[in-house]
Length: 261
Image 1 (spheres, rainbow, N blue to C red):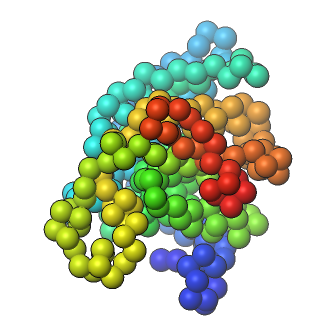
Image 2: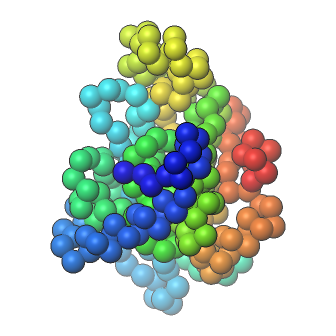
């Protein structure tokens, strides 16, 4: 359920983050335990400086095979082995990683997203569940080439109480995409009535770890520098929080593509 301004423009949805946090507080006394099993680094370093981030990958229902992450097992394995030292603060980071497919059970969705420090998934409505995350959390949204609609970022921008960080990575290499079920079936509703760019939006994707880990390291650096205030200051300075992974495997900033970010 979304709480909107009444406008027909989906971008004009006010206080969605506050609404999600209100719903969390309503359910909090009866929330189940987190359904996520996290695997990875659980030990802290001897100097006590290691911060272990809980990273939750979001999957989509396979009933309609669109926008799937095709190399999920590889990403989980690499995430569980991830270690990073922020050069500015010497804070060490490691990760515990899990996977979740949101469904119709709202309390379970809330419990799953509340357990995570970082949520990673393909662009789509299910990513709005990240608004249930605790303060300091991050939503890393994955886009495909030719499709750019940062509506979740816009909703967070319109809520003055929001403390959820929005980051994104756009995979710019068409070779990493595979046709989704809608495209294979030449779905008339999706691709004859709707813009052809939605073929790219709905394609299945191999997500390159090299690109994703770069965004994860950027988030870690912000956390080491103070979390939300540091993220907010970064944005105020005009520093981007969205990145493209080019055909040559290069990471590039996407400031012009994302309305000045």
